[in-house]
Length: 430
Image 1 (cartoon, rainbow, N blue to C red):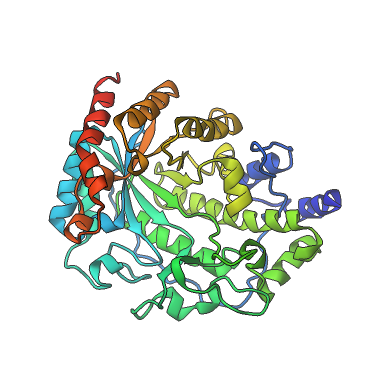
Image 2: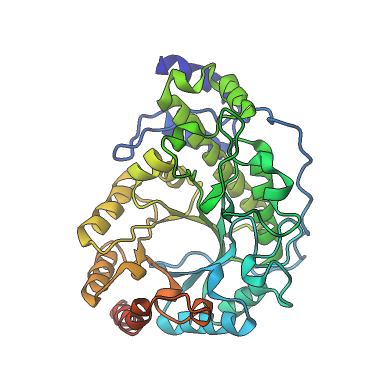
């Protein structure tokens, strides 16, 4: 049965972009990800589920721009979340602290739940700025300051989240209000319910992928970023039982699936999973090609789920294929844990599945309750080559959240020793 589906799909993907051809060579070679099935779904683009106007063109890039800085090895990165800052002084203080800590790369969040932290023609301002222009451009300031301090900066963007919270966005022009049909729907036509976690856009829709890539192009064309850092490039389910199997089941998605495979989702759950996973691969591929055109030399990296088996089985995220095929320059597995053996196993699974690919361990400092845990995980990073990405800045230094009294006292008390351990580790590196 699988062989027949595979044969049909090969016919459909004969004329592919070179990167897609490499992806398909991997997909059909039988390579595995420590338990995660390989996608068999077609990268041929289905017809749009519904006619939608194309995204508005973004501002063309300036005639003369600074070249993107390549990834330095070992990479010493730190995540700066959108809720860590909301004033120019915040931006400057954060970046100076990162430089003094010894970081060489900052992953600066510029997009959250379809809201952004820069003046955009496509999406509203973030809630950290009360959905209105704060009177300065945080991303422009961050890029300029990071480069002045000799650091790389990658624009960190949430990919699939479309909103978070129990009530709709209180701002006109938000995609949730303008295009509710773009979100996940079940077979009865009911939209994924709002909750305290993310509800996501449907990556099976070409118009959704076009909109997301247009936002990324707006960033890459206007700012001298050194890379684009993808996060939440995965499905997100609600808490209802079997929600993974319920979404998306709208008529347009099912029609596209049947056109590609000749099957219905319940005919073979594995093939249905593979097809949905590959819609994310299409989005990563589109982003890669856009970045090469608009910002040559800029890197494309991604924060990915803690290990490849869980990433695929739970969230249909196929990061190993993205890294092995060259769609991504690096992945940062979010192996956030207090347990050293779990941290080691998670990272080793990616390293074995993508030999030669740049796997930058994501270190979840906020979960570390003692110095020995941080030292031990950083020592493993040293053994693997010295690359790391620290989550997050707030685990080391005060942020906007301290002013809002949203940081637990335990986290505040842990900051001094965390900074000391990280600095000692970096001082001991060549």
